[in-house]
Length: 198
View 1 (cartoon, rainbow, N blue to C red):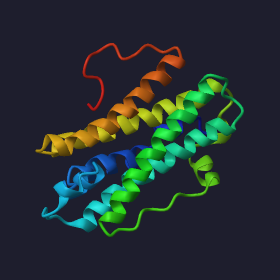
View 2: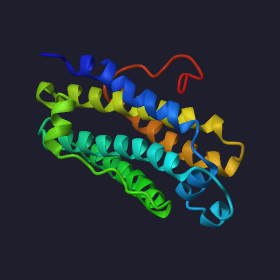
View 3: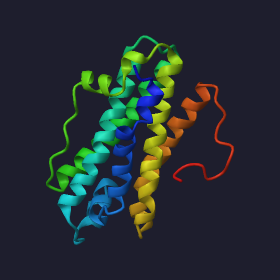
């Protein structure tokens, strides 16, 4: 049976993150303006909405995955206070990301990708291999690092500071989560500067 580490480093898992990073470089200014809650800025801008909806749905799928990963961790009985409380708080952040993505997709006339059943996420993330708090935190840290790098990967695509700001804010949330989880695991933080988004 594969370990959690093997699952998270598998080609299929890495491909979903790369797909998001590769596609988001073409996300239009309209989509980002709507995602940032700047509807007035989006008015009058052009762009291929169907591509944007597809890209945002990839991001939404990753947020669904994160929400359910935290649900699996919280429901596992393996997390101790105060780590459990922080995990629930981080799940709440991902729910806010999800809500912003869904609202943007709907404003663009698209249909948000549906969340899968918890059992499907449990199987995909190999939740049955989680044996202790460290395993749960390791899973969450790897997901958060992938999300950090995915959101950072889109920032250079935007010419406008306003449009890049929302991607930076999402990346900041993910980085905060990753940093906390790394510390909770007793691992050193990255020694080198500029270690995220590379």
